[in-house]
Length: 269
Image 1: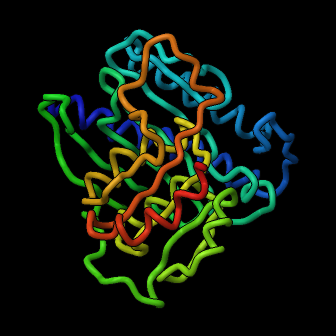
Image 2: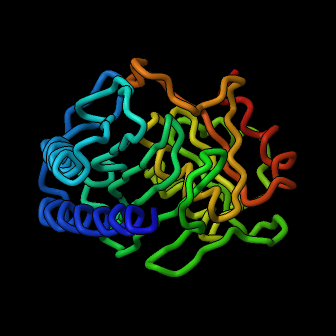
């Protein structure tokens, strides 16, 4: 299995670099159209989605694919890739440098590997999360090839907690940290994995927003807390995940759950 994981990592390096270079050349020059959920889509999202799906078909023909812009039904394949071709499309259309390309690899409906490239700031994150899969595979989480871990710091006014645009009602209650809003769901929680933030919340992430980072942040030692009672994974074969949101809290350590979880419950009431 080691050769397989080398192939997976190498594939992600190459395809995200190619797509990232293309998107950098288009940054801030394309207009977006609003989708039914209020998010934006551009011709670049569609190009990126098509290019990545085509590359997966060529490299891993037995693998299934679920992507934001094309296929929302979870397929009947042991291995499945979940693609977010541009995470942070609004940032991208406005010419802001913070947006990413996200690839999650699932085994029997559960993410075991994730890869996220943030092209403009040259940060590539990846991680392996064995969980209960029983797979013989590497372990750990990395940024630009260097191992990353969550922060061990106590809360303070000089530490960060990240919100998304749909969770600002959290601010009705004092938060024991500085608030940041990054506009990119994956990067929101990846900052927890790399030790830059103590936690982050996403009120309405779709499955393509969380599949890759599910593996990365847990491999870095973070605690993932779904804010609804139903478990997120394993995904169910044949289910349409296009309109389903998964409210999520991620914190650096379990002892931070009682600090931040009461503050974010308002987003699912």
